[in-house]
Amino acid sequence: MSAISAVGDFLKGVCSGILELSFPVHCMVCRDLSESYLCAKCRQKITLIAPPICTKCGIPNATPRCWGCLKHQFHFELARSAGAFEGALREAIHALKYRSIWMLAEPLSEVLIDGFIESRLPKSVDMIVPIPIHPSRKAHRGFNQSELIAKGLAKHLSIQMDTKTLVKSKKTPHQVDVPFEQRRINIYGSFSVVRPERVKNKKIMLIDDVITTGATLDEAARMLLDSGASTVVAYTLARSIQYIKEAPCIGARSKKNR
Image (tube, rainbow, N blue to C red):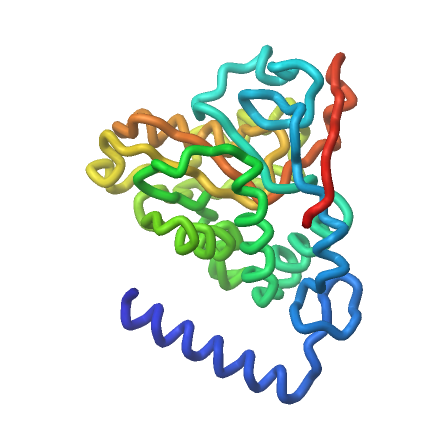
């Protein structure tokens, strides 16, 4: 850890302590008093993704391959997600991402860890790489939410996390504001690998907060593979299933977070 990171963590701890002395901790989803910013009751309401799923992108699906993966050839080997992007999980992610409630990063990272066993993703990767955001967006928000939630997983798995090699070099409209069919075009060419020697012949796990069409993860995987990475898998905190009604065969089955 660098001296700057250590000072940053120290200051966050001091600020958190002052806040807790001044204002009782309460859940940022249900607003009840709690020992965590995401209470146990709301954690129980989060639906973890479980089979049957698409073996490629991990979306709840009745057949081995969903309509999206039959239509597109993704660059990542496979993608998995911890939970469904709905209810308490969606509210918590929005609070972190759009209201800058960074205290939610730790409990959301715990959800990411909880879902990892169900994901059956390989632990034998060389590096965890959070999806970067554009410097101007990071300056405005104050942090990269994917980096914050990935930090806990990297520590839990004892895998190095790299936040310097893959960068968002082109500012693009938010994917959520772009129609599904235009998201690949919107994100194309927006990432760069500035230190290709760091990823050469490496197995990499990309981490993001939410996957919908897979366009962002696919473009990041493409750049890493073009720069010499041997394999790229993807893991996200949440899986948006709002567009699966377009699929001809969807059979979702999930279970509650324990």
